[in-house]
Amino acid sequence: MTDRDDVARREILTRLAVSREELRRVLDPPHREADGNSAQPRTPGGFPRSRTMQMFTSGRGIGTLGALAAGLLIARPALALRLLRMLPASAVAKTLLLRAVGSLRAKRSSGE
Image 1 (cartoon, rainbow, N blue to C red):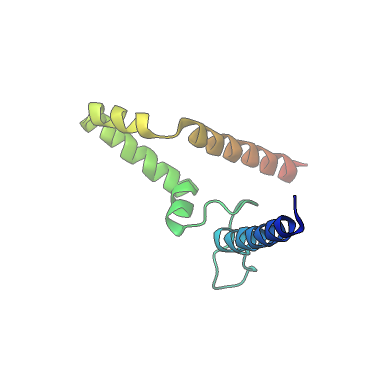
Image 2: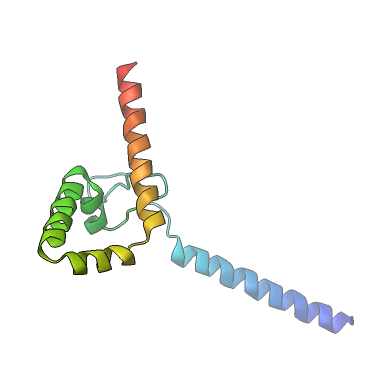
């Protein structure tokens, strides 16, 4: 390779590094400090970020979703089963498993 190719390659790699850093900054914004105005994420990864998902994953939200799913299953079973097939089963199972393990740890640490 010539010296000219090396310079062009370095310039390309520099621009690529800058664009990657910009994408990281845009797609993964820094977490805000806990204050009275901002919603504090419940999990270290920051999921769920939206207030709607936070409400659905809270204790009352899970009960509401369960009642809604049961009502839909009773009223329109074919539609409920079709919608159930659309759910990402691994993500739902992982969320439920993490919540169960978290509640077990909380009970164990408060009991000791």
